[in-house]
Length: 199
Image (cartoon, rainbow, N blue to C red; front, side):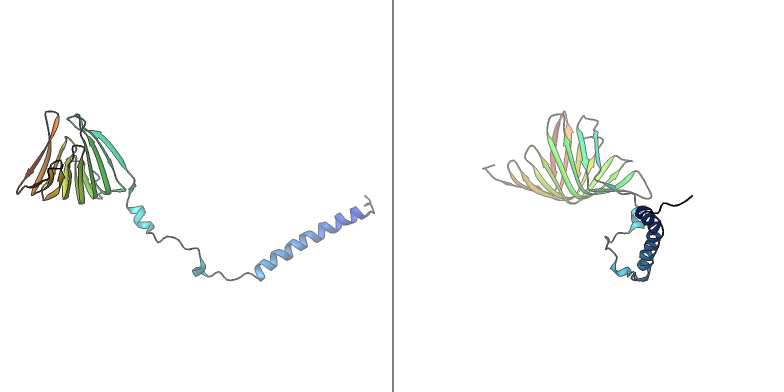
């Protein structure tokens, strides 16, 4: 078959040869003039231990809710929670906040830096700058507060200090228990109350 002798046909025949050769030339220059990669010039990443993350099944921003046997609702949130490797029913949490609303309408807020939840006893030990605030006007601080999540009960086995509706107070121990639909705050062991008439 004869090839048409016109400029367009000649251009097409030329392009079929020239363009692949040009592409090959450009590709070869990429390899000839490429630089050796310096690993130190790599994009910096956050220094994290991937193996530790894989080993520790950490929960981020967990939230738990429940109802006690006496009808109070409890909502617990934390920044992180890490199950115990030896006992999955135990869990360590950080930056913990708990909200308790009793059947009488009293609101109790607990905050702490750390906490250990024990599923076997359904209790939570709050430690590290523990703060208890009630809607009835009490603001108390402690180093350790044990919360019974089966019923509305809080115990501070060590010293507490803070303020109440009538003034500032200190005590060697503190308990908050539910009685007949209401909550009773019991202070023990060297109770000191500074009465402030303006409150």
